[in-house]
Length: 323
Ligand code: CP
Image (cartoon, rainbow, N blue to C red; front, side, top):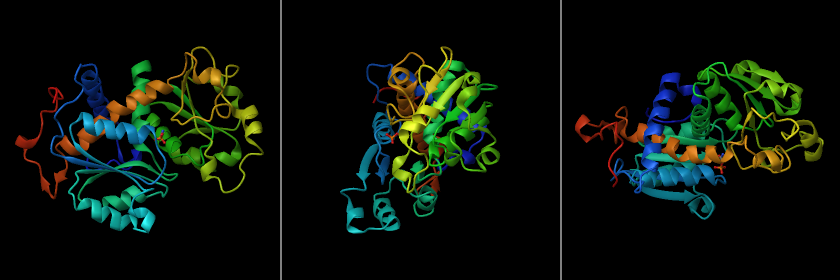
């Protein structure tokens, strides 16, 4: 894998390989010393133009656990504040010869543009409303840990699909892994062509939620709403909030975070036994270690314009001894 830009670029076998790799890193995480030398001497740049807690923290920790040198930049407080363009920022950071750039941007397509401007492998950590592929991978990993294979499982994605890059990446990934996906929300928050574009069923009626094995809820993304898409958050919560009344005892509950408590989810289900939200966060670390490994040590991408000789590649498994 040269870059991770979108789930739509992957096939099932590639996702399976990342899942297996993440399993190996989960084993490393159970050791006393949770660090391996796999990426020693390689540089990873983390560049975030939008707020993040989970994605930035887990990619940074993943790079450190793999012994990479990490450069972490938030746009606020960097030379972006002085007007430096994205292209010039990438040219500047590329002068340090990083082998991976993890980028989050408010603009759809930004990660793909960056991939054309640098020799580094590029990981899309969220580009506007387009995709958030590592989120979908960690969600597949979390579900496989609970359910095994996803073939034939019914997954409902509920909420603000319109503004959600997570919805798009998750719908594509869940379908690739064999699940049947339903998008549920008010008509104003589900794009007209979403069902056909993503291969999902669409409903504006939450009363059928009981058929779902997994209820994947989305954050109401008020920061991306230039106009009003629902009469009020109170009315949205009355019609679409997943709460103790709507969630059955056998159904698994997911949310990418951060959660608007009391809007898309009630406090009782966030903190209840069906919730996988904390497990999703934990999965983020090992899956992002696996993604960095695939890009930097998987043996398929040229490094600095040349193919890595086999002798320079760390053995694929086991992952390595503690650093
Ligand atoms: N799910 C997710 O992307 O969370 P952060 O915005 O905290 O990274």
